[in-house]
Image (tube, rainbow, N blue to C red; front, side, top):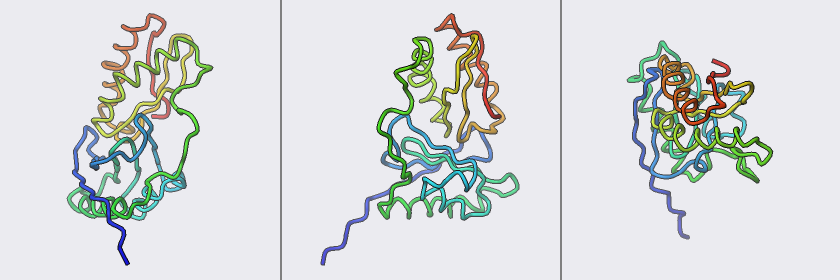
Amino acid sequence: MLEAQKRPVHLYMEANPNPNSLKFVANFMLTDDGVSFDFPDEESAANSPLALELFNFAAIERVFIASNFVTVTKKGDIPWEDIQQHIRDQIKTFLESGKQPISTQFDSDPLFDENDSEVVKKIKGILDEYIRPAVEQDGGAIVFHSFQDGVVKVLLQGACSGCPSSTVTLKSGIENLLTRMLPEVKSVEAEGI
């Protein structure tokens, strides 16, 4: 009888501006492009078998999965040197098994809604095209929350959540870009941080 072949999995680790987060990058896509999943605790991870496995490590505080990477945020008092190889091995073993990291399926694109106003469509487009790739480089994501009275509210996820430099990125980068490209936008704020 033939054995099912394991998928070749290559993972490498990347540091990011958040000293408590580490990005584990795979050689293939884990989610649809532009779709991310943020699990701030084990209770929120019901639709992610991979996140549930990672929360078995007592040192893990948050798990974020997007495109081809998993960002893991640890508790502040545990040195990365003590746990990073164990986490990497766990992710690699999980992915080699052929299991899906996320069990959620979408019927339509969760990022765009046909009922959005023209300004909101433009804001989401700018976030998706210009901001998302840069934020993903640092192991996180930015998600549109709302737009009202000239104020864009966004959610910061993954390594961006709790990162010391996220406020500077928000004001210096994201707000400057959106206010320059869209006169309707006056400021940008982060929700929930």
